[in-house]
Length: 426
Image 1 (cartoon, rainbow, N blue to C red):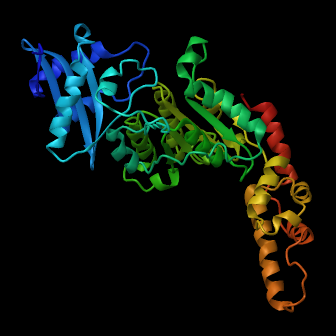
Image 2 (tube, one colour):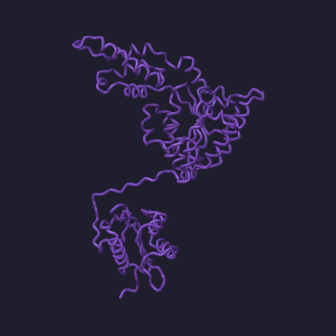
Image 3 (cartoon, rainbow, N blue to C red):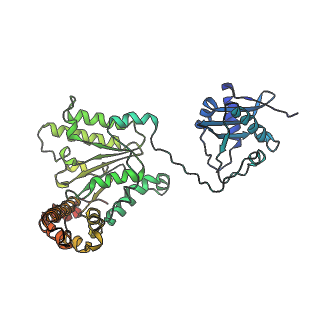
């Protein structure tokens, strides 16, 4: 006769069950299921405990999904191992599942787990050709509502890798922003304080917003964009609405907060008591408070960094002031390739297009590409059906480039490089 008996789990067993689970853990081995998942399975799935003289000495629990049961816990107290208790608990669980019509029982174990005799003795088969994948969504249930109210969202993966070219900017942002925030403990151990707020500056259309979104995607943090123009109609006024938005952001565990065209609310103060000056003053108070909490990053972007209030950019408010310039040659090649039809791309000289579109923003390249396509469509309709001449050629694209005005003029480019020397902080 066995020195234990198997019975259903009762809520009063919870404290002892947790103790058995803690005893059964192997140091340094991450369990597949969390304690919260185990407790949920005990309450809403099927669970059994082994009891000896009123003491819980072993436990098993599983959750049920459709016609399959997943074992989330099989544990024995330290002094009850190697006595067949694990097999007995599995048998007890199987009996309870069978009565509910469940025939398929599965278990996931860490690869380093060695205590698997109970499963082998109970004729569980090891599936060698399976891989276990896991992803934890970086959002707590309590954050869903405030994130939705803020208009924030989790961005798709891969935005960072999709940034073609701009390698200097990517390397700089990877090293200064992403690395310290993704490896916080390592950074702190080496005396690196993870950044809390940064400014991206550069000519219009150079991808500052794209970089901000890519950072959020890379960190796997929610992205919240603050639109001062939308807050202006708030009954509390722009300053009060801005204050409330940042209070609401404080409910999020992690967030990349983005303010585009920040010069609209942080321009240089001129001494008059205007409402805009009050907004600037409010923002100057908000940023230090925002920086007090870890796990959040404020990114402000501006096309006109010279117009910002000097107090806004000082040390202590922003860790870095990073320039984002026009797309480089590699970036322009990638952008052109994106807008040229795949069937036509092999006969187009992309290098020639990239060289000819220096100082073009991504939007400029898109406009020139669409312009060439539109002209080709019109020619294709008007030309005889048997002409055999390709409508889209390298020359056609070059003509479209000649007819497109670059957003980034020589003056804008010159000012940008001067601002790098005077204002950038990397």
